[in-house]
Length: 175
Image (cartoon, rainbow, N blue to C red; front, side, top):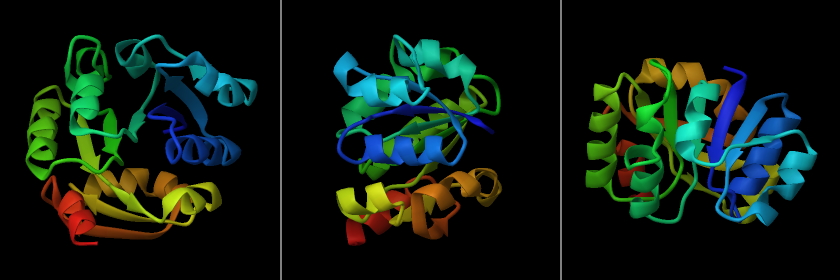
């Protein structure tokens, strides 16, 4: 699981992606604005034109996007990863989005043999930069076990809230 796709390189996502690269992961990215990718490509990240192009190159795809609609677009729509991800690929959505939509997205991905964890974070930009985020995880514990080394790069407090998709989103809402 050395090849990670990262989509959502904003104020939180970019430092998270850089931390993964520093830890030795091979990063593949997809961005709307090329200027956002400059620092990451200089550090060795590979840029893909669409999420659909990125998906077959990676084992894990992390999304850190601002809205539920953005997550659905990247994962499920015309150029979404659902069309080309390898079987047993793992999607980790670290965005803060709707619980109901998280559950629906996870169900659709499961039909394509793609596992998903919802893992929203708290700790702000500083936590993202320092790799000290709190990560609230919903989804199968067996899948969490596979990606836990990735989470350990990004955060210091990783809490598995429950086996149900959306459990991480519920915990984040309570937080």
